[in-house]
Length: 272
Image (cartoon, rainbow, N blue to C red; front, side, top):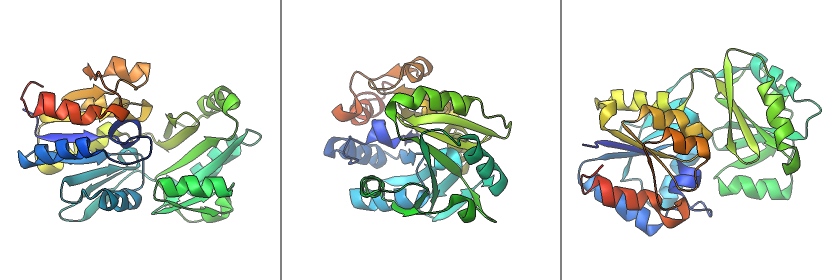
């Protein structure tokens, strides 16, 4: 029996316009009414996710958050956050140095603020889609004396993404890992951080066995999440590796409310 559900956001629970469909919302409400704990597992900062939950009108349904790809877990009832495995100034500086000469820019997120070494009206508008406020900054100065959850590497030339990924693969530091989270974005985090670890921490927090957890995802930062969950479900629009890892691949895409359909058809009908 499923007692806890965690879902990725972009490409999974959200539609392309970053909204939650009425159908997905209804499915979550029905699951919560049956005593199932529902929450978000995202690469986004805790603060922006909380703001978006409020905009979606889902503060009553969402019981927990796994943010920063597992680096922070949050209990929405007690309003307590547990943060782990941050990257220090030296590590962030080394990553930025490694990408010098590549057609990229960098994002460092602190709360609802996105700090970047490249900013235009278009990138400011894009940040707002994610509930973030973009600031042009000297990231080396910004990082002095700080520790952060992650750094995003954003490819500014789509045709150069393979080159940028090869550069990322060549970065040598056993203390960090990287993965592609969007077609033009790579994220670096501490080697211990992943959504699967975050799910384990949340399950332990609520005293729920991992065998009774369900997770939805679609991309590389969801692999560990789907592997860790008792039941891992990948969207029809998910990447090939995610589909191989998952126990189930939905017949619908995120645009077709795959999460809602799976909850109604298999969780609430006890067929999962």
